[in-house]
Amino acid sequence: YENMLHIDTKEIQKKSLGREALYEIVMGIESDTLHSTYEKTSTIPKDGRPLTQKSADVLYDISYAAQQISKIADVRDPLYEYQEPKPQATFEPKELKEIKAEIAKLGDKVKIIQNMFWDEKSPELESHIPSEFAEIYRLAYQSGMNREHLDAIMRMTLEHMPFRMRENSATIKRYFQTLLRKMVPVRLESMPSVGNKKVMMLVGPTGVGKTTSVAKLAARYSYLMQKKYKVGLVVLDTYRIGAVEQLMQYARMMKLGIETVVDPIDFASALESLRYCDYILIDTMGSSPYDKTKIEKIYECLEGNDTKYNIDVVLVMPSSIKYEDLKATYENFSTLNVDTLMFTKLDETRGFGNIFSLAYETKKPISYFSVGQEVPEDL
Image (tube, rainbow, N blue to C red; front, side, top):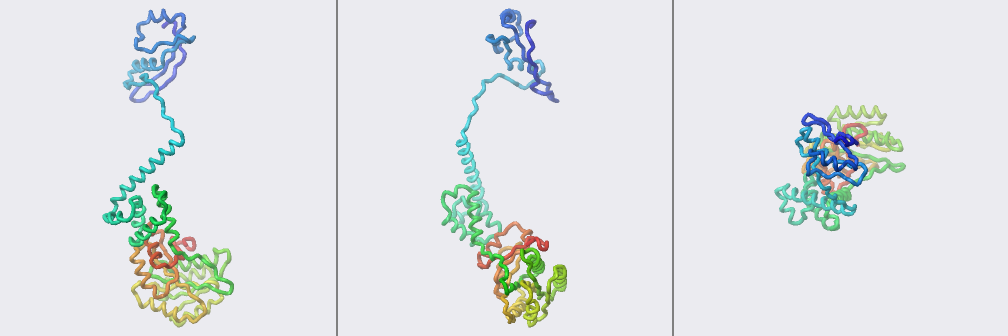
């Protein structure tokens, strides 16, 4: 090796706890001494890769040098054994898109198979609903939607949804959500016209948040709208001293007029006392849906209204109870000729199928949602 030249040294594997460092050393030899060097040297194995003789500087093959160094360093892993490079497959963008599309289809098929076993009643479903709709059916049913309503909506979806959109589960979900949005009746918020006033009465069971909702609406109409409206409050809930005091405190903070009604015959005069207001909000006594006596008291107030004001009756219910309880509540308060629905406590649940089913069943529009206790933000 007297005539060999050292060209380069490079660390190709750092030292670690389990093995020594590995270096790559590149050596060269002058071409005119190549043959004599081969004759003198007996340490270069015959199976080593040949040196190049066409260049001015002849280099050892890198893989051979690395192999020798690994033996010296006692590296057990068979690193850097020479292998012919394998050509890498290249794909055009179109081919990549096709592969991704096939993978997505396979994923959808796996979901279909999984959802076929989610419910013991799924064989009944399969008789009229294709398997690709199993996932959206499961999600809707678990959200609290009534099964009869869900089946009817699924049939409607199958009738109107184009076949080309049924291959992708995400497309099915978007289509189904769009359909539900169109089917939910809503009452858009409208402002009172000039010379008129809007009167709203909030009714519903005990503890659903009627008093807090009245405060939110009062703050919204008197402070948060583009026009600052004059708002007045009427309290029928004289059975609960705490509720009266709570609303009195809100009225003082927002500088609103407030009237209390103990007897139904005083209801009309309370409205007349607030005739200067653009909005009159009425808080009623809470009661069990099955307590006919308190519901009749509210009915007497409505029947005894000899003023010229139309009263919009808003049924307030919590979104955290199941559909059957919502339906029972609506049926018991329906004697008050409910105009719109308001749902509270949306922050306490993750399933809203019960809300959809009630609106779908009763055909009553939804006017407001309440999503927390903060006044007036959570409305």
